Image 1 (tube, protein in one colour):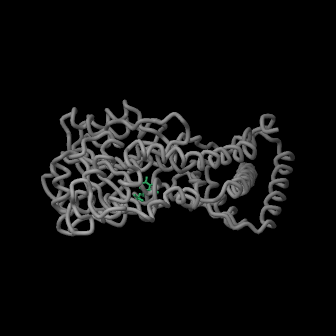
Image 2 (cartoon, helix red, strand yellow):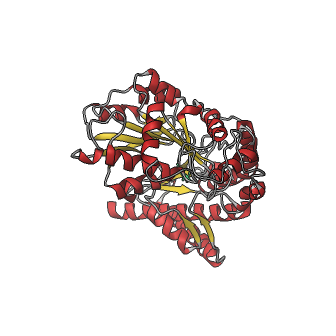
Image 3 (spheres, helix red, strand yellow):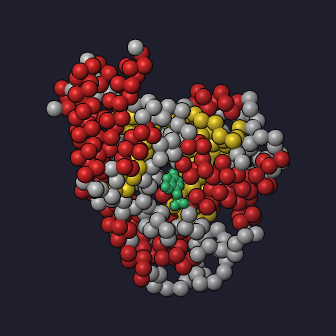
Length: 433
Ligand code: PLP
């Protein structure tokens, strides 16, 4: 029984070696199963994608509510009905929303590039003309955020992500006197990968903190704003109003998309910010685009009908996803509770479970899992430059496989975690001699 287990580090040597032998046997059995399972990326499952298949026969008309022919060029800022729908979902004014193409990540990239090339509304000069440009990166975080900055030559400074958001004492101290600190990532609701939710208090501090850079920009990536796993549908802090009330209306740019609501490859993305920042963004966007894919935008307007239609749709996603997250929790508890070798998140939404294994064993766990046919996200992926200073963090993505596969894969992961921990404890004791 899990509750009667002794922490691994408290076991006497003989029992520890017996434990290791049991894990080695369990691992050999696992390998013999010849599994081919994948928990690497946060993709929707086929069953989730099926929920949106009515999109394939939409739109039913070629004109939007304002009479615009969606087949033609134009309407750079996106269709009014879609902007209004995003505005309601994100708690902002429609005039503050740009509805774009199929990827919010592309919009984020565009904003960073525009800031580097031209500077933003409050910038004294283009960021590329600064001696150094750096971002605060709450960790663990989203690997593609970090890869983007690395690609663009923007420096990254880690700050811890707590359950209520980034470590604000660290954030405030880092931005106060250092003008090279130009921005930060925040995934405010059900963050990737820990599931953390930024509290009102943390949001208010982010909005009002003094920064040496006058154009410090928060990239508020609300990718999982509506992706609840329980009936308690957490509301995101209203960061745009908070920034505006603090006299820093241009401090934040918000992003969202329907990638994990409708189709991951053919959804619609949105950006929201102050009216001045929206005008700045569109001014630059207008040089590279004559308008978004309005046919797909109208298709989404017709499919969802309203913001409430989106919320109802997300409840159907929840029915598919919640059992998978429960399976992760069950497998980890069954395999690891009481051993004191790992902690993990119990997210109320989003796409990931954050698993922290014994320090120095994450790389080993991922390799063991791979050699048993279970693909995990590479260790360190949730940190800038792929470097987890404690080599302990593993991001689990249980959404894509079917439920039975999640169960099997996670039981296997638990075996790998226990095996790597036992090896580590034995090695550490050996080196103490
Ligand atoms: N932001 C976060 C935090 C994500 O986890 C993801 C996808 O996993 C994205 C953005 C990608 O969004 P999009 O598909 O809109 O580009």
